[in-house]
Length: 376
Image (cartoon, rainbow, N blue to C red; front, side, top):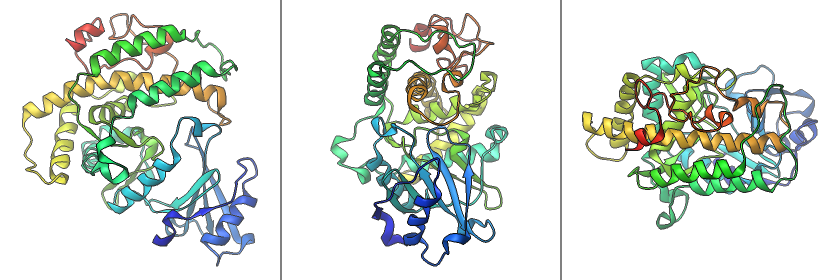
């Protein structure tokens, strides 16, 4: 099926009534399957797109074709061509599934063996070291494989700018899907805070590498039998700061639906995680894999700093999604403030709606009283 990696089918799948469109796709991808025998299983973990598994007979991993229907209006802030390139590059390096085809509003790809990682495993050394090792392997892939290496600049700031533009340009108010939300801060406040972070982070010497950029547990497939993890969903994957990708993942230890920042990884866990990561990154880059304590500490400081802007990124993403997405998920509530937020947290001076995703408990203990203490 490798020759079909660049196949595009002129088919659209209605997310409400998908069977008709899926039948057309499978006629090309699995011509031996009788349409009346095809079963469709919807996966509900996703909060950007809709994902369905298609199969005939029993639900066995080898026989499943995954169909992902892109979320409404996501083309405004996602580069789908870049996503296709990432699929091919990661599959080539043994880091991702095979892409079968694209269609007008989605893609079809290979099922990855294993289960979606449960949050409880994030702090298991045997598991988080696998995650660190896999990220190191991906970060070592030459960024030139997805484009002109001379033009490889971090995607972070341009994406934040795009989210800001979308959040400001829509005439529609944010549609609240739960009660009790605080007032969303003004764009003036948000822009001021982003500029403050950018002025500090712009001069941080973080390597620019090929990043996943969205490594929450729902995007990690764990195969306990084989002792492996694989990352899925590459729509945000692109060239970015090494420390951002790691810091964003550490933020995700707090969870998505029931966010609890007391679960943010301890300094000891972060040091162990980063040691495994650096060893893998060096080995995959073809250099001596010995890692010093100095290297771990330097990366730790950079990760703590970049974890802050990762919070901002998903705050803006949530505001845009709340306006446009048709998925039944409380995007505003997903970014509501943590009720345990203390006034001496790193970002306590910020608007409370953003506080929830503008903290980095791993920066210091006890937490610093302001951002200047972090960045100086």
